[in-house]
Length: 177
Image (tube, rainbow, N blue to C red; front, side, top):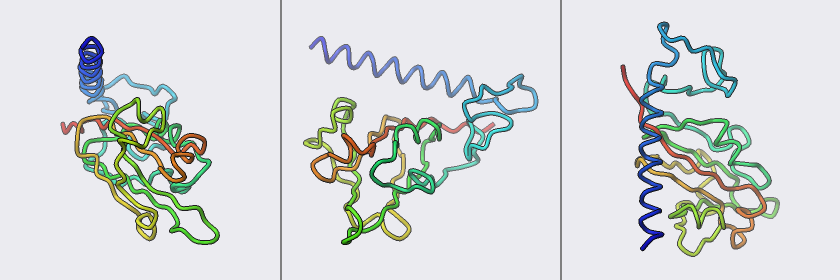
C-alpha cells in the first residue's frame, strides 16, 4: 500500500514538474525573451532540429539519427541530446532485416521504469519484430502524455542490457502562441 501511494505521488510530482517546465519555456526563443542559451543544444544558435516549443507540428524523428537502431550505440544519450520530444511526434525505428551478415533487432515497449532499468521483458510488449525496421522503418507515435520506455528485446534482452539499445522519452505538449 505504501509503495503504491509513494509511486502515485512520484508520478503526480513528475507530471506537475513537466507541465510547469513546458509552460515556463513556452516563450523561449521569442524576440522579447532574454534567453541566451545554456549550451545544451537548445536556444538561438542551436543545431537541434526541434528546439524547445518552437516546432510547428508533429515531427518524424529517426531513432539514433543516421546511426539508426543497432547494437553498441547509446540510445539513452541520443534521447537526452535530442530532447525534448513532443506529443504526437513519431519515432522511426530503422534497422536491417535479419540476414547472415546482421543480427536481428526488434522494438519492445516496457510498462514501467523498473522493467526498463532491469531490461525485464516478461511484461514488455513487442511493438516491432525483426523484419519491421527495414525500408522506411517502423513508426511509433507518442500519443500519450506519459513516459515511454523502449528497448531491443533480442537474445533475451542482451541488446538492452549490454548493447545500449534502450531509451526513454516523456513527450511534452507543444504550445502554439
